[in-house]
Structure formats: C-alpha cells, structure tokens
Image 1 (cartoon, rainbow, N blue to C red):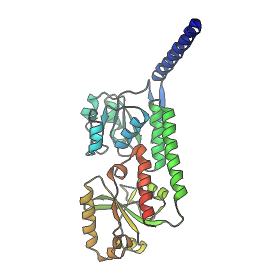
Image 2 (cartoon, rainbow, N blue to C red; image 1 turned 45 degrees about the vertical axis):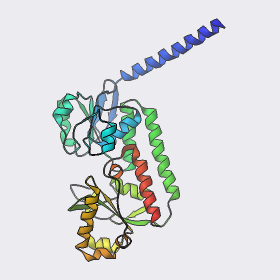
Image 3 (cartoon, one colour; image 1 turned 180 degrees about the horizontal axis):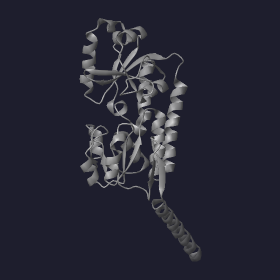
Image 4 (tube, helix red, strand yellow; image 1 turned 90 degrees about the vertical axis):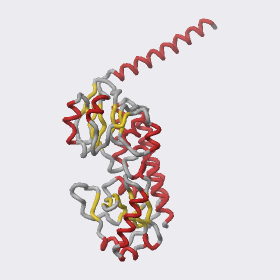
Length: 309
C-alpha cells in the first residue's frame, strides 16, 4: 500500500510538472494574430501588460480570465468601483499617451477606424496596437476569439462565443413573424441620428425580432453606421417604438428629444408617441460595446419588443 501510494504521489507530481511546463511553454511561445484591419501582430510571449481604451474590450479580457493595467475613462460607477486599481487612460476619441507609456503596455486594444491614426504614436512608445470594432454581435464574437488567442485562453473564448450563439438561437426561436416597427436613435441633446442595420444596435434589433424603419436611409459619411433623421419618412413609417441610446445623461437626452419633437406636430401622429413608447436604453448595454454582456443587451431589447406585440 505504501508503494502504491508513493507511485500515486509521483504520478500526481509528474502531472503537475507537465502542466506547469505546458503553461510555461505557452507563455514563451510566439503568438501571431490578425486584427480587424488585416494587420498581423506578433508577440514573443503572452502579453501581460494590456491597456484598453474601450469598455467592451475590458469586459472581454476579464471574462477570458485576463487583466488590464490601463482602461478607458468612464463615468460608469460600477466599473469605476470594480476596477478602481486599474489606471484610467482616456478613450477611443482621446487618450493620454504619456499615461499609457508610463504603464509600459505590451499591447493597446483600440478601435478601428477611430484609432488608425494612432498606430505610429502607440508603436512609438514600444507597444503593439490591436484594432477591432463592434458593429455586430458577430464582431464581438470575433473580438472574443482574437483576444482569447492573444492571451492563450482559447477554450474560454470558445465557451463565451458558444454562450452568445445559444442566446441568439433562443431569441430567434421565440421571435414571431410580425415584427415591431422601431426607430433607433443615437445621440445627445441637439444631435440625434438614426442607427442603421450595420450598427451594433441595428444588428441587435434585427436579431431581437424588430424592424428598423431607417434601414434604407443614406449613411452619414463620417459615421457610416448612422443616418440623419427624416421626419417625413419617420411619420410615414409610423414606428411603434422609439429607442434612444446615448453616452450622455439619459434624462437630458430624452427631454431634449421630446422638446425637439414638440417643434413639429407631425410627430404626434406616430404610434410610439401616442402610446408613450419612447425608451432610453441602458448606456452600459447600448451606449458602447457591451462585450460579453451583449447577451443581456439582446435579451433587454427582445423583452421590450415583446411588450409591444
């Protein structure tokens, strides 16, 4: 019995050593990935110092089991509490290069196309930069797969991608043939745009079983996922719901939009207005890339649409 116990202990020790050796080998093996701009980025080993200038990327990295040394600046109290020890460095529109440099990142996770102009400056501080975007649920799944390979968490990435795939399938199974007509609006007081199907919110609306009344509106050149509002066409399409999305103060955005509608009585003929179905969507799910929480965004929108049927 003593001999058997000794053999068992040796086997366990060998397995542990083998596992440790495998982990060390993974950490020291070169990793090549291709980002959403078809740029190939190669790491000599698993990057340990990671900075993200977007909240969605933060969510994905931590869901995979990784960590950041720098994150996007945000007014989201929950994120600021949860990640209080992670330095805030700005966002995709404007970040503090000096602060990022002080963190000595192996890689900065940034946005395509917003941060294409920043490739040289990030590489100039000795860091790699990976550019991705989230204009659809599929994009987020691809982000998860890419980041999973980057930090060698492929199994977890497959699990997260499968969870999203299952949620999409579940929602599709519950969706009825008749679709609720929706106007998706993104903006801030004084600036409102209609979200198109090639935006993340537009894709979520389609998957949740809604009909985007602005689907054929001409895109704004600078913001190709959005279009100018066209009151005449909106009235003609008669949306049953109006969803508002914003980074700004939600109540101020809704009040500003209602005041803007009041200047044109034609809005009063719309079902969404008559039935008081103007909804502010949660900023953490719809104001930005929600990362793995895209399943919550899809569920939230689907629940709203069901209430109108």
